[in-house]
Amino acid sequence: MVRDGKIIKGIAGFYYVHVGDGLVYECKARGVFRKRNEKPLVGDNVEIECVDDSKLKGNIISIKKRQNQLIRPEVAGVDQAMVIFAMKDPDINFNLLDRFLLMMEYESIPVTICFNKADLADKSQRDKLIEIYKNSGAKLIFTSTYEQTGIEELKACMKGKTTVLAGPSGVGKSSITNLILKDALIKPFTGLTEDGETMETGEISRIGRGRHTTRHSQLFAIDNETFVFDTPGFTSLMIPDLEKENLRFYFPEFEHYEGGCRFNGCLHMSEPDCAVKQALEKKEISQSRYDSYADFFVSIKDKKKVYDKKN
Image 1 (spheres, rainbow, N blue to C red):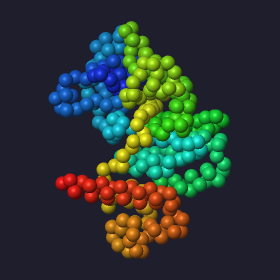
Image 2: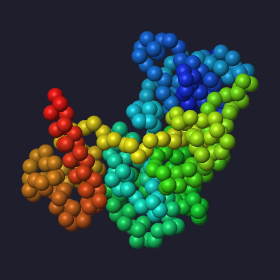
Image 3: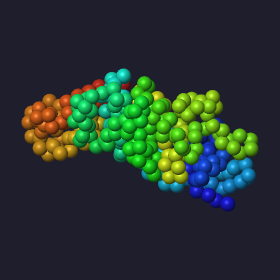
Image 4: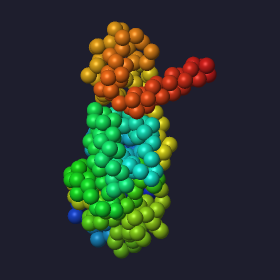
Protein backbone atom coordinates (compact mmCIF):
# COMPACT_ATOMS: atom_id res chain seq x y z
CA MET A 1 0.00 0.00 0.00
CA VAL A 2 1.22 3.52 -0.86
CA ARG A 3 0.58 6.39 1.54
CA ASP A 4 1.29 10.11 1.56
CA GLY A 5 3.21 11.58 4.48
CA LYS A 6 5.63 14.20 5.76
CA ILE A 7 9.16 13.52 7.01
CA ILE A 8 9.35 14.72 10.60
CA LYS A 9 12.83 13.41 11.45
CA GLY A 10 15.82 11.92 9.69
CA ILE A 11 18.78 10.26 11.39
CA ALA A 12 21.38 7.62 10.45
CA GLY A 13 19.72 6.81 7.13
CA PHE A 14 16.26 6.39 8.62
CA TYR A 15 13.37 8.78 7.97
CA TYR A 16 10.34 9.03 10.22
CA VAL A 17 7.26 9.84 8.16
CA HIS A 18 4.02 11.10 9.68
CA VAL A 19 1.06 9.78 7.66
CA GLY A 20 -1.67 11.34 9.78
CA ASP A 21 -3.55 10.66 13.02
CA GLY A 22 -0.32 10.24 14.98
CA LEU A 23 1.00 7.34 12.89
CA VAL A 24 4.73 7.52 12.13
CA TYR A 25 6.47 5.05 9.80
CA GLU A 26 10.19 4.33 10.03
CA CYS A 27 11.41 4.40 6.43
CA LYS A 28 14.49 4.06 4.29
CA ALA A 29 14.96 5.94 1.04
CA ARG A 30 15.25 3.88 -2.11
CA GLY A 31 18.60 3.77 -3.89
CA VAL A 32 17.17 5.72 -6.83
CA PHE A 33 17.53 8.91 -4.78
CA ARG A 34 21.28 8.37 -4.42
CA LYS A 35 21.58 7.81 -8.16
CA ARG A 36 19.78 11.11 -8.78
CA ASN A 37 21.87 12.80 -6.08
CA GLU A 38 18.65 13.62 -4.21
CA LYS A 39 18.36 13.64 -0.44
CA PRO A 40 15.06 13.51 1.45
CA LEU A 41 14.83 16.35 3.97
CA VAL A 42 12.86 16.90 7.14
CA GLY A 43 9.70 18.70 6.03
CA ASP A 44 9.48 16.95 2.65
CA ASN A 45 6.09 15.68 1.57
CA VAL A 46 6.67 12.14 0.32
CA GLU A 47 5.04 8.94 -0.84
CA ILE A 48 5.90 5.80 1.07
CA GLU A 49 5.41 2.15 0.32
CA CYS A 50 4.25 0.37 3.46
CA VAL A 51 6.37 -2.73 4.10
CA ASP A 52 5.07 -3.80 7.51
CA ASP A 53 1.97 -2.03 8.84
CA SER A 54 2.09 -3.79 12.20
CA LYS A 55 5.61 -2.46 12.88
CA LEU A 56 5.09 0.78 10.92
CA LYS A 57 7.94 0.14 8.49
CA GLY A 58 8.18 1.44 4.94
CA ASN A 59 10.24 2.84 2.08
CA ILE A 60 10.19 6.35 0.64
CA ILE A 61 9.41 5.99 -3.07
CA SER A 62 8.99 9.62 -4.17
CA ILE A 63 9.57 13.17 -2.94
CA LYS A 64 6.92 15.69 -3.90
CA LYS A 65 7.85 19.08 -5.33
CA ARG A 66 9.44 21.36 -2.73
CA GLN A 67 8.13 24.90 -2.29
CA ASN A 68 11.44 25.91 -0.68
CA GLN A 69 14.54 24.59 1.07
CA LEU A 70 16.68 26.07 3.83
CA ILE A 71 20.38 25.29 4.16
CA ARG A 72 20.66 25.95 7.88
CA PRO A 73 18.77 24.23 9.29
CA GLU A 74 18.54 21.83 6.35
CA VAL A 75 14.78 21.54 6.08
CA ALA A 76 12.13 21.84 3.36
CA GLY A 77 8.52 22.84 2.89
CA VAL A 78 8.46 25.85 5.22
CA ASP A 79 5.32 28.02 5.13
CA GLN A 80 6.50 30.63 7.61
CA ALA A 81 9.19 31.45 10.15
CA MET A 82 8.56 32.62 13.70
CA VAL A 83 11.40 34.28 15.56
CA ILE A 84 11.15 34.84 19.32
CA PHE A 85 12.87 37.64 21.21
CA ALA A 86 12.32 38.85 24.77
CA MET A 87 11.23 42.44 25.31
CA LYS A 88 13.49 42.47 28.36
CA ASP A 89 15.95 40.15 30.09
CA PRO A 90 17.81 39.81 27.76
CA ASP A 91 17.56 43.03 25.76
CA ILE A 92 16.77 42.66 22.07
CA ASN A 93 19.70 42.17 19.72
CA PHE A 94 18.25 44.16 16.82
CA ASN A 95 21.10 43.29 14.46
CA LEU A 96 20.50 39.56 14.98
CA LEU A 97 16.76 39.98 14.55
CA ASP A 98 17.26 41.95 11.33
CA ARG A 99 19.71 39.33 10.08
CA PHE A 100 16.99 36.73 10.50
CA LEU A 101 14.46 38.92 8.67
CA LEU A 102 16.96 39.42 5.85
CA MET A 103 17.58 35.69 5.52
CA MET A 104 13.86 34.88 5.40
CA GLU A 105 13.19 37.72 2.93
CA TYR A 106 15.97 36.26 0.78
CA GLU A 107 14.26 32.86 0.94
CA SER A 108 10.79 34.41 0.34
CA ILE A 109 9.49 32.96 3.62
CA PRO A 110 6.95 35.08 5.57
CA VAL A 111 7.99 35.98 9.13
CA THR A 112 6.17 36.50 12.40
CA ILE A 113 8.11 38.18 15.21
CA CYS A 114 7.08 37.06 18.67
CA PHE A 115 8.12 39.52 21.37
CA ASN A 116 7.92 37.50 24.59
CA LYS A 117 8.05 38.59 28.25
CA ALA A 118 5.60 41.39 27.49
CA ASP A 119 4.78 41.50 31.21
CA LEU A 120 8.25 42.96 31.85
CA ALA A 121 7.82 45.89 29.44
CA ASP A 122 5.63 48.98 29.39
CA LYS A 123 3.44 50.39 26.60
CA SER A 124 6.16 52.77 25.37
CA GLN A 125 8.52 49.85 24.68
CA ARG A 126 5.75 48.00 22.85
CA ASP A 127 4.95 51.10 20.76
CA LYS A 128 8.65 51.53 19.93
CA LEU A 129 8.88 47.98 18.57
CA ILE A 130 5.72 48.45 16.52
CA GLU A 131 7.19 51.66 15.09
CA ILE A 132 10.48 49.95 14.18
CA TYR A 133 8.96 46.93 12.46
CA LYS A 134 5.60 48.18 11.17
CA ASN A 135 6.86 48.30 7.56
CA SER A 136 9.30 45.39 7.73
CA GLY A 137 6.85 42.93 6.21
CA ALA A 138 6.76 40.88 9.43
CA LYS A 139 3.70 40.20 11.57
CA LEU A 140 4.14 41.12 15.26
CA ILE A 141 2.76 39.19 18.23
CA PHE A 142 3.34 40.07 21.89
CA THR A 143 3.26 37.23 24.40
CA SER A 144 3.84 36.48 28.05
CA THR A 145 4.22 32.89 29.14
CA TYR A 146 4.07 34.10 32.75
CA GLU A 147 0.65 35.74 32.26
CA GLN A 148 -0.39 33.27 29.51
CA THR A 149 -1.22 36.12 27.12
CA GLY A 150 -0.84 36.08 23.34
CA ILE A 151 -0.45 32.30 23.23
CA GLU A 152 -3.79 31.66 21.50
CA GLU A 153 -2.95 34.29 18.88
CA LEU A 154 0.38 32.51 18.38
CA LYS A 155 -1.33 29.13 17.91
CA ALA A 156 -3.85 30.63 15.48
CA CYS A 157 -0.99 32.09 13.42
CA MET A 158 0.57 28.63 13.14
CA LYS A 159 -2.62 26.71 12.38
CA GLY A 160 -2.48 24.72 9.15
CA LYS A 161 1.13 25.71 8.41
CA THR A 162 4.66 24.37 8.76
CA THR A 163 6.55 26.87 10.91
CA VAL A 164 10.26 27.25 11.63
CA LEU A 165 10.67 28.38 15.24
CA ALA A 166 13.86 30.27 16.09
CA GLY A 167 15.33 32.55 18.72
CA PRO A 168 18.40 33.12 20.90
CA SER A 169 18.76 31.62 24.38
CA GLY A 170 17.02 33.15 27.35
CA VAL A 171 14.01 34.56 25.50
CA GLY A 172 11.50 31.95 26.67
CA LYS A 173 11.45 29.87 23.49
CA SER A 174 11.32 26.62 25.43
CA SER A 175 8.39 27.86 27.53
CA ILE A 176 6.49 28.93 24.42
CA THR A 177 7.27 25.63 22.70
CA ASN A 178 6.08 23.79 25.78
CA LEU A 179 2.71 25.54 25.55
CA ILE A 180 2.44 25.02 21.78
CA LEU A 181 3.18 21.29 22.12
CA LYS A 182 0.97 20.78 25.16
CA ASP A 183 -1.80 19.12 23.12
CA ALA A 184 0.36 18.08 20.15
CA LEU A 185 -0.58 15.03 18.11
CA ILE A 186 3.05 13.89 18.23
CA LYS A 187 5.38 14.98 21.02
CA PRO A 188 9.17 15.23 20.51
CA PHE A 189 10.66 11.81 19.77
CA THR A 190 13.67 10.21 18.15
CA GLY A 191 12.27 7.04 16.70
CA LEU A 192 10.12 3.99 17.31
CA THR A 193 10.46 1.23 19.83
CA GLU A 194 10.73 -2.37 18.67
CA ASP A 195 6.96 -2.79 18.91
CA GLY A 196 6.32 0.28 16.75
CA GLU A 197 5.39 2.69 19.53
CA THR A 198 6.48 6.33 19.42
CA MET A 199 9.44 6.96 21.71
CA GLU A 200 9.01 10.33 23.45
CA THR A 201 11.54 12.52 25.19
CA GLY A 202 11.57 12.83 28.93
CA GLU A 203 10.18 16.37 28.98
CA ILE A 204 8.83 18.65 26.28
CA SER A 205 10.31 21.78 27.81
CA ARG A 206 13.80 20.55 26.90
CA ILE A 207 12.80 20.45 23.24
CA GLY A 208 15.27 18.48 21.18
CA ARG A 209 17.38 17.75 24.26
CA GLY A 210 15.48 15.02 26.07
CA ARG A 211 17.18 11.83 27.17
CA HIS A 212 16.57 10.13 23.80
CA THR A 213 17.40 12.99 21.48
CA THR A 214 20.27 14.50 19.55
CA ARG A 215 20.46 17.94 17.95
CA HIS A 216 19.04 16.92 14.59
CA SER A 217 16.29 18.87 12.88
CA GLN A 218 12.92 17.55 13.92
CA LEU A 219 9.38 18.41 12.96
CA PHE A 220 6.61 18.22 15.57
CA ALA A 221 3.02 17.53 14.55
CA ILE A 222 0.53 19.74 16.40
CA ASP A 223 -2.26 18.20 14.33
CA ASN A 224 -2.54 16.62 10.88
CA GLU A 225 -2.03 19.99 9.14
CA THR A 226 0.13 21.96 11.61
CA PHE A 227 3.86 21.33 12.07
CA VAL A 228 6.68 23.07 13.94
CA PHE A 229 10.47 23.00 13.50
CA ASP A 230 12.81 23.93 16.33
CA THR A 231 16.07 25.35 14.96
CA PRO A 232 19.44 24.96 16.73
CA GLY A 233 22.38 27.26 16.01
CA PHE A 234 20.32 30.43 15.68
CA THR A 235 22.99 32.87 16.92
CA SER A 236 25.36 31.82 14.13
CA LEU A 237 23.09 33.09 11.34
CA MET A 238 25.07 34.31 8.36
CA ILE A 239 24.16 37.11 5.97
CA PRO A 240 22.85 35.59 2.71
CA ASP A 241 25.27 35.38 -0.19
CA LEU A 242 24.07 38.35 -2.23
CA GLU A 243 25.59 41.37 -3.96
CA LYS A 244 25.70 44.64 -2.02
CA GLU A 245 23.85 46.32 -4.91
CA ASN A 246 20.89 44.00 -4.31
CA LEU A 247 20.71 44.26 -0.52
CA ARG A 248 18.23 47.15 -0.66
CA PHE A 249 15.63 44.92 -2.31
CA TYR A 250 15.43 42.80 0.87
CA PHE A 251 14.35 45.67 3.10
CA PRO A 252 10.59 46.12 2.42
CA GLU A 253 10.65 49.60 4.00
CA PHE A 254 12.73 50.89 1.08
CA GLU A 255 10.36 49.71 -1.64
CA HIS A 256 8.09 52.76 -1.42
CA TYR A 257 11.06 55.05 -2.15
CA GLU A 258 12.55 53.15 -5.10
CA GLY A 259 12.76 55.47 -8.08
CA GLY A 260 12.67 58.58 -5.91
CA CYS A 261 16.44 59.00 -5.60
CA ARG A 262 18.51 61.25 -7.88
CA PHE A 263 20.52 58.30 -9.21
CA ASN A 264 19.14 55.10 -10.66
CA GLY A 265 20.48 52.16 -8.66
CA CYS A 266 21.03 54.35 -5.58
CA LEU A 267 22.47 52.19 -2.78
CA HIS A 268 21.08 54.47 -0.04
CA MET A 269 24.45 54.91 1.61
CA SER A 270 26.35 58.13 0.79
CA GLU A 271 24.65 59.26 -2.44
CA PRO A 272 23.16 62.79 -2.56
CA ASP A 273 19.39 63.33 -2.85
CA CYS A 274 18.61 59.79 -1.64
CA ALA A 275 14.90 59.30 -1.00
CA VAL A 276 15.58 56.62 1.62
CA LYS A 277 17.95 58.88 3.58
CA GLN A 278 15.38 61.69 3.37
CA ALA A 279 12.70 59.32 4.70
CA LEU A 280 15.08 58.38 7.50
CA GLU A 281 15.45 62.03 8.50
CA LYS A 282 11.65 62.37 8.57
CA LYS A 283 11.46 59.22 10.74
CA GLU A 284 9.41 57.46 8.08
CA ILE A 285 12.03 54.69 8.16
CA SER A 286 13.34 53.30 11.46
CA GLN A 287 16.90 54.33 12.37
CA SER A 288 17.44 50.88 13.88
CA ARG A 289 16.46 49.13 10.65
CA TYR A 290 18.60 51.47 8.56
CA ASP A 291 21.58 50.90 10.88
CA SER A 292 21.24 47.16 10.26
CA TYR A 293 21.08 47.78 6.51
CA ALA A 294 24.26 49.87 6.62
CA ASP A 295 26.03 47.25 8.75
CA PHE A 296 25.05 44.42 6.37
CA PHE A 297 26.09 46.53 3.38
CA VAL A 298 29.58 47.08 4.79
CA SER A 299 29.90 43.40 5.75
CA ILE A 300 29.01 42.27 2.23
CA LYS A 301 31.38 44.86 0.73
CA ASP A 302 34.28 43.79 2.97
CA LYS A 303 33.63 40.13 2.27
CA LYS A 304 33.77 40.83 -1.47
CA LYS A 305 37.10 42.65 -1.04
CA VAL A 306 38.62 39.66 0.76
CA TYR A 307 37.32 37.30 -1.94
CA ASP A 308 38.76 39.49 -4.74
CA LYS A 309 42.19 39.58 -3.06
CA LYS A 310 42.27 35.80 -2.76
CA ASN A 311 41.36 35.37 -6.40
